[in-house]
Image 1 (cartoon, rainbow, N blue to C red):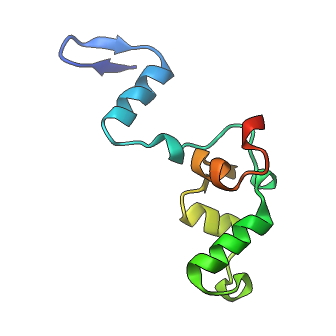
Image 2: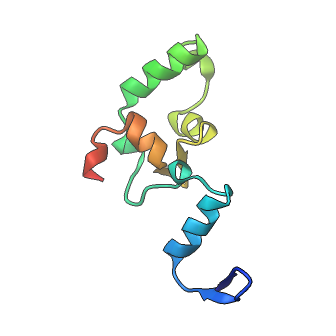
Length: 96
């Protein structure tokens, strides 16, 4: 357990700890992995089109897999889409 402030009150919930980290700027909500998501929840064609437009190269020329690019762009972590990845490129983000 962590302490919160000078009163040394114990932080008892993960939600409270997450809010503290977000407010301090040490963690961003859009970079958090979304539970129960996989790369299958991604609109791969739309993502490939975005990457090709952003880089000016074909997807094959980049010589990287979709998971590699997603992780490099902070759109996935631990084989799960982040909130940003899901909202930007998810097939049905409202479902999750």
